[in-house]
Amino acid sequence: KQEVTQIPAALSVPEGENLVLNCSFTDSAIYNLQWFRQDPGKGLTSLLLIQSSQREQTSGRLNASLDKSSGRSTLYIAASQPGDSATYLCAVGGAGNMLTFGGGTRLMVKP
Amino acid sequence: GAVVSQHPSRVICKSGTSVKIECRSLDFQATTMFWYRQFPKQSLMLMATSNEGSKATYEQGVEKDKFLINHASLTLSTLTVTSAHPEDSSFYICSAAIWQTLENYGYTFGSGTRLTVV
Image 1: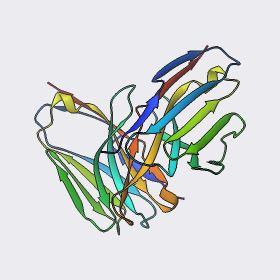
Image 2: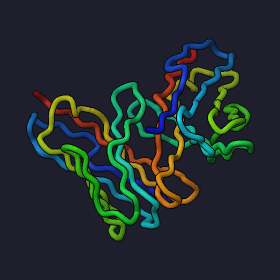
Image 3: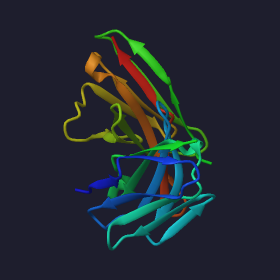
Image 4: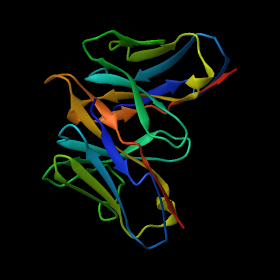
């Protein structure tokens, strides 16, 4: 059974810092990995989707990498802003189109 | 892009009543939809997978008679919480797989429904 772990569980940084969120998974036989953002009481917003054949994806200040062999992904946020404060969820896509979520990282960017 | 519309966004109901949550794919056909439940400050837990025209597949520990899922068309899936109890209060989110190619796909999520049972 796939298990997804996100470290750290919570993170507080001053505005402007570059930061890295980590995601690890136990079964490397994945189809894709997706990073989401969730604001309190809201649904999920897809940030980046990495297919199993890819190693990274970039969107604006966000960069996500994928290393299937080691079971790891990182989400890099450059020049963090208070508006980046949210919970970031890593999810791994596997057989049967199933998605397994990590526990999330709650990010607080202080002005 | 592919959008899933979920409603209601928030519902309060009395214990013992039933509540229906709808998810519609607006600009694509969703053969498969997933229903998740999220407790406060926790991640999403998959409840069930619904396939159009067939019975839903429930995850272990999820009562299929309590959480009725119907996926009668390629654009609509519903989750009905029957005889709701306060412990059913939670955030429910639906999701659909969206295909970029035959091999590459991602997921799009509804905006969620906050259910409060009083």
